[in-house]
Picture (cartoon, rainbow over the protein chains, first blue to last red):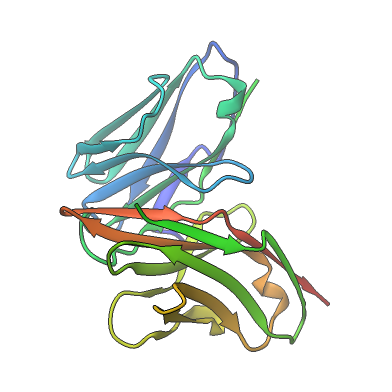
Length: 115
Length: 115
């Protein structure tokens, strides 16, 4: 059982829909992340939060909107997505953001299909 | 900026044979190195990591990796493959630059075990 849980595990949405992905970590960590995993591409870091403050935004389109209400929860709000946004979205957490040799703990991911 | 290259997107070995997954990195500062494993329909799980000290690192499930600075490599090995080792393996490098830690993943190597 992972200390990072993601819901839903699978999501199919139309290009005009609005949906959200939810992540919760039970590890007492201060940093949380959203990654995108597409076929044949390296994992892409999307957003980084430290103590509910966004510390990194890697040129992600505005149709992806993160929200971190507290250090245990992270959301990714989705609206007007494109088919190329279909991917596995992984949430992760670590004790701190800038701590040498941090282990990052991943959730099982949310499979998103945009039709 | 750092980068990671995993040689071979697919590797097949017979059950009981040696597993060798290759990873080379580039970094302008001393790196921290990781191997993560992703089983089907799951998130990434840490196998092992190198931060400082002994260059031969032992991880879970009988895997180990050796940090070779002169070769800029961090290859993953296991003496005897088991069917349950079938998964995708990701090498990652982390450096701390001006107080920010950046983790970069390779594109992954899919390991298939032949009965």
